[in-house]
Length: 331
Length: 279
Image 1 (cartoon, rainbow over the protein chains, first blue to last red):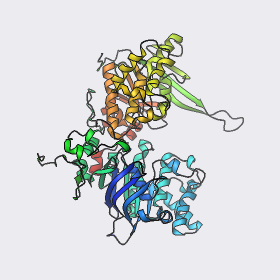
Image 2: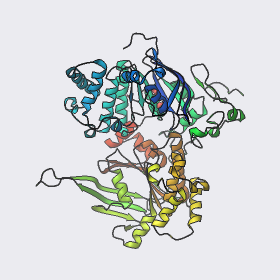
Image 3: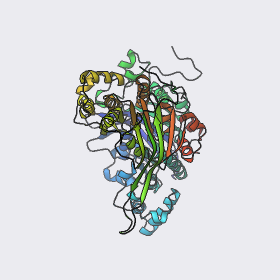
Image 4: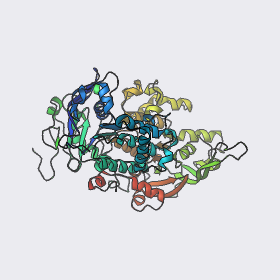
């Protein structure tokens, strides 16, 4: 664990990610303290995965970053590829959605974990292999001594994702970015993997950035949540406050469109509240607030001026935010 | 327009499987040994009536997809019967098989891969009528179906890549509706869609059951999504139907281990906020 606990695990300021034609992330700022857990929620096209890739320095060809990403005393935006490469897996690491396409299919899983350890700690082969087995045991992988010799295709999806988590955690990173880590897994396995990730992150004192479209996962794993829409954070704050009392109409809509076992009427007449319309394509964003064509409270002001996030901890980028519970709506 | 909820149990099932079993033969372990077998479906009884939405849940590998293949006539069962309108589809003769083929339609998980990217939406919609050799006023039928799924007619000239996932799934549903089916089989129809769009598609499926009197078989791994759409759910595990019940009963009093596992896997915002979701 790091000693300089005053410095946040990551501080992102005015991040803009684009490729010349389209801008996928349009000015995103957030800070995750040491050991903090932030969830980044958004639909496809909201820019959440591009934010993660920008943090890792893994943007596709032709994409570039503006703004600043302060991490471990340096600005990652200005770092060389080589410097970034030495950080990935060491001070910050990432768990991807599909472990089958992110593991090397022709290398044994144990070797893939131990090569991360050897590269970043300089440990010799034997030490690294011993650590690998230990790490795999911590991930509740059965028969770890034999499993190190397995190839990715020989093990189950849940086991593969645990291998990915083991790789990400191997060098005690300050920040772990998990991009939809359980979406590709079977429902019954999903919870086990989340529980494991939860515990492993806590034991290492790492910070977590959880990227998902699944609100229940955020509620279970994170203490802060940022809701992204069309490349911007539209609402950010403590999970308890944002989910119990959303201020942005988009957040409200997302929460309402969750099917839960509570809103089911047995006569079959119940309907889910759905957000009308669809996420606008990046090359044709509406003027003003990007959510205005789908928003029930949109006015002319929303169509003309873009609302900014306020300075306070919990705020929504909205001209007509929903009322706080126990407070009468202004006008 | 026929609204048939709640229906009496004696309404004859439209599509039904009786005592259905399917065994696959695996490769020999050694040259002279017997071929090991894998029983993927084990004496399944399952039925859907007009205007009824039934759910099928289970983990991956539980046999949901194989059962779908039987229900749609893609695969012939080794034992048991598949009945459409009371007649065995594999023994009923060519005319009945044709009727079955046009009356049972499927909506798949990912509309991006189930629609031909080089075909205009209008052409894709006509495809089922062409391949099933259905006569009639095709242009009028297209407009009628577009209206049922809530799409504009300028969609017809466009290509799949011009649409979002939610719209594409509407197009896939429209294509399934083209031949005028009596039963719609939806295999994980919303799991590839965004949350705010999922609700739209679930509501659409629900409306179709109500307004057109369709039978709907809704297959998914997420019990809360199935529960929202259907009135009766069958839980599958290792090729067997282990429990059947109303969604809320299954949720509150799960009996079978497979049901308990599925119920236990449900994460909700409430349990997350209460801090006991991963307990």
